[in-house]
Length: 207
Image (cartoon, rainbow, N blue to C red; front, side):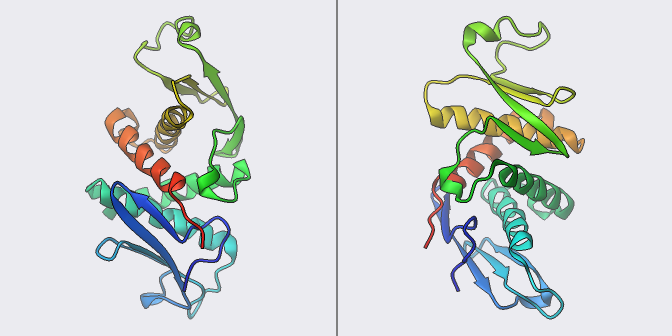
């Protein structure tokens, strides 16, 4: 059965792989969702023996399984870390929900969003303005966050897609830092993870 939620796509792409999203009346072991890297499928339960999934829970489960899929494509062992996947998926959904987005392929950088029970502002700087920022920010950084102020900033790039890529990378790094995961210092991980996440959003197809 094809996914019916407005937010959940029927299909998306990661690297060169086509992924499908399917909803079934129930899944094995009373699971709410599963990510099958062999079949390139995300499967969600419409209901099971003990759960009747409302749309909110199904959306959150989709983001959980999407994180699994991204990590599978990265061939990263964190895909087996359910604590990491659950936290990242829940916070990504919290972010998306706060923007009011109803279709992932319509994603644009928001002016404000909610995360960790606080409101955030998004600031955009030119390269010249970046040079006037705090002295402790290296010039090769093209984005960052000020958690105490609820500000996420990035330096304007040459295209909207590149802007979105930088923004998403900073968002991922901010989320990782918030739950004190050491990967927030790993700029390569944040860049690859966010690039694949953005690709999934932009290639999302709705039946």
